[in-house]
Length: 238
Image (tube, rainbow, N blue to C red; front, top):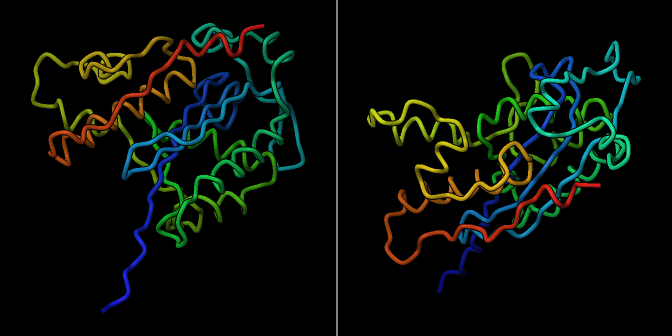
């Protein structure tokens, strides 16, 4: 009798940043949220969220202080006072992101390293790259996350973008004219209580991907369950 092959467990890490602006080269990270989900059972088995304290020039080649634009802070309802009083040191946050991804790796092999999941995830990846480079953890980032090197020799993490999936799902629907997270969530019956809070956005994003995954699998009775959630902003308020 042939030996049974151990089933691989593939994992995604939902990622969302709130930031001090749109340019990851110039603007600061203000809040991060992560959730680890198994692709086989769609179980969310680990969560992480933090505000990031104001940070400035470091030794990692970044030439000047990071920018905090008032319009961006207003958009996420985050204040500089919240960051000063509740924020964690960015190097500590970067280390905890790496540790989170290591905990989320449930099977051996490069193909089982966590894949990032997000809405317009390229935006968040830029700020994640800023965070780990600023903290001097780029090499650990490359070892821990699924990814590959691009033409220029730079490591690029692998990802699933729910924005692109939304366009695939609804491009033929004339009633859908925008693919913003809150609009797609409403279209799919996914609850989003506190848009532009990083943790709430990650929860909604994974729920949206869960709906798409159920449709791909086309098996009745095995629909992925949406997460029961409370408004997340209260965990950050003073």
